[in-house]
Image (cartoon, rainbow, N blue to C red):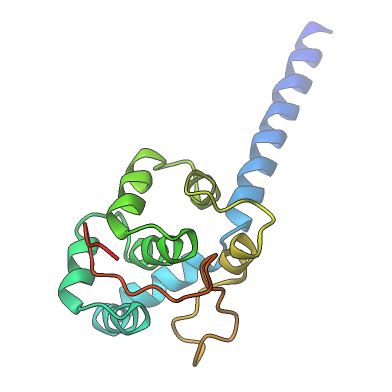
Length: 153
């Protein structure tokens, strides 16, 4: 009887962990697809990020050297834009929150779950959609021009 209880408890714990991982990964499912696209066409991806955030290719390459995956470059710039922080601040939080997921990083930057900014991140990226259809601007309503790592606005 004790072994049945133990088996039940272990099964329930495994199910809860599995559901939690699915829920957190589900918030930003599109990230995986964008990363595949970036890996398939690194130069095109870098050019798209540079164009989207009005930065130079050298700045994109510098950030690429500081993140784990190409898609993280887009996320660092996008979260900086939404939260109103420079890239170096977002990179600092990225390193500190590594492994906790994009939702945790967004929250650490002041992007509240349920906010329009957070929902914009959940909806997807705006690199290849032919414009800024779902673009959400920072709190003050002005688009940001990033000057790269450590740059001032």
